[in-house]
Image (cartoon, rainbow, N blue to C red; front, side, top):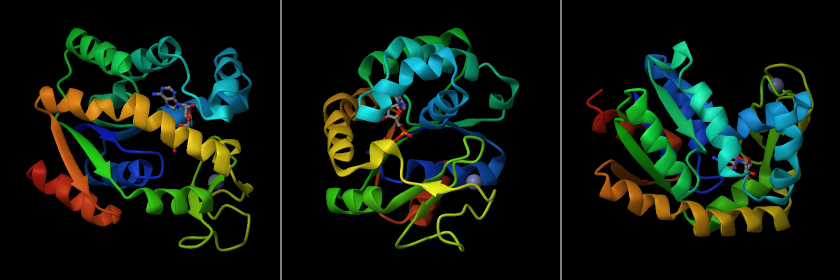
Length: 215
Ligand code: ADP
Ligand code: ZN
């Protein structure tokens, strides 16, 4: 399947994407994960991105498009992909449309995951992430803590609160989402690709996506 997952930070895009990869071998492409990997590796791209990310600001479109142009042409994308956290602005969506036409890829659907703001805020402040850039497993101190406090179940690395998950940075990210990313819902509605799904259960979101795709 070739999908874009839209939704505010904390809406569950990453969780839904991971569940969908298990269905048909499509790959999850998270620009946030890629960027955090670059920051940890200390690459030039990572150094450029880090200051924006720590403030909860968006990384410039040109950097993101450079990453995605390469990523979407890697062989593992042929089977399908789930775009998680990209596109995030109208210019990114326009550039993606042009890129997909050029490399002859057709999207199946754009899913907008709608979750109430109080649920989002609660999830983001209680979210913890594995510090190992190759893992980045996600935990929640209330609903799904690691078995041993502060230690990743999957790889044993420390489980930490991201620098951009302080209350101030979270509020700023939500504001940025409303201003810059929410307009993509209208963009993809016009393209005839949009499916909005309201729901706080990732299982239910995945089931709706499967039935929309006739799976
Ligand atoms: P969340 O969806 O929970 O906000 P992500 O992991 O998707 O978190 O992104 C973390 C940060 O990485 C963003 O706040 C932003 O700085 C940067 N980022 C990720 N994807 C993009 C994108 N498509 N365009 C611009 N910046 C991005
Ligand atoms: Zn881990």
